[in-house]
Image (cartoon, rainbow, N blue to C red; front, side):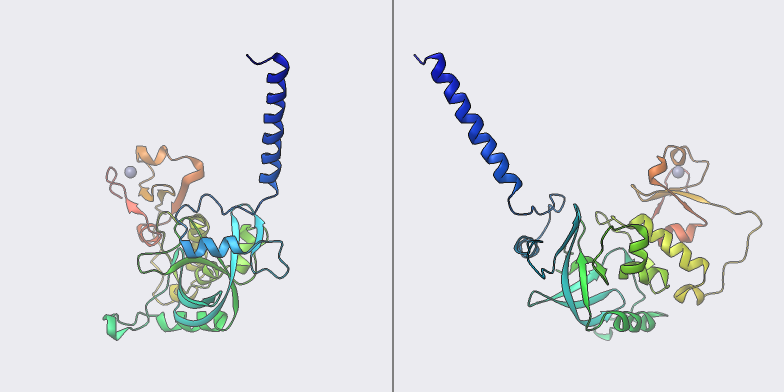
Length: 271
Ligand SMILES: [Zn+2]
C-alpha cells in the first residue's frame, strides 16, 4: 500500500509534467486557424511552413483569423480569376464573393458580356506581375481545384472596413463597378461589406452600373429585408422579416438588388 507521502509526491510530479506541457504548448508552432477545417493539404503545409517570426516571411500574422500568404500574379484569366505563383507552384485563384462579367471563351461556349473585357483589363492593370497577399475563408478550393481567396494588394493590418475598401482587390472590383456580389456559403466573411460596396457603386453609377439606364424613380420607395445568415429576403411586413436579428438584417431597395446579392425570395411572403 502506498504511503500518503508517496501519493503526494506522485501528484506533484504529475503537476510538474502538466505545467511543462502547458509551457511547451504556448511556445510551440503557430497553429493553423481551426476554423479552416477544410484546408487542403498543400495550403496547410504552406501555412505551417511559414512561421511569422522568420525574417522576410511572406506570411503576415496580424490577428487571429487574419492570415495571408504572399503570391505573385502571373496571368489574368478574367476580372475575377487569376493565376499566381505560390511558393513555386502555379495556382488558379478565384476571388471570393464577387462575379465579373464574362470575357469570351469560345471553347466553353461562353459569350462576352458587357463590361467583361473592361473588368479583365482592370484586373490586369491592377494585379498582373504584382505581389499580392491571399486570405482564405472556410472553404479553400472549389470543385475545379481553384483556390478561393480574398486578394489583398497590401498586407492587411487590422482588417477594418476602411482597410478592406483601400487594400482588398475583391472590394475594389465591387466599389469600382467591375463586379457584382456573388455570395457562396460558407465563404461569407466579408459578404455584408461586399453588399454595401456594391450598393455604393450602383448608386454612383460606377462601371457596369452606368451601362443600363437607371431604374425610373418610383413614387414610394419599396424596400426588402434580407437575412445575411440564411440569404433569404422578405417583404418588410413579413413575420419572418421581423424576426431577423439586427446583426443579420440587410436592406435592399429593390428585388434585383437582393437577387444580385445572392439572396433567395422568401416562400412565405413571396417578394
Ligand atoms: Zn418572408
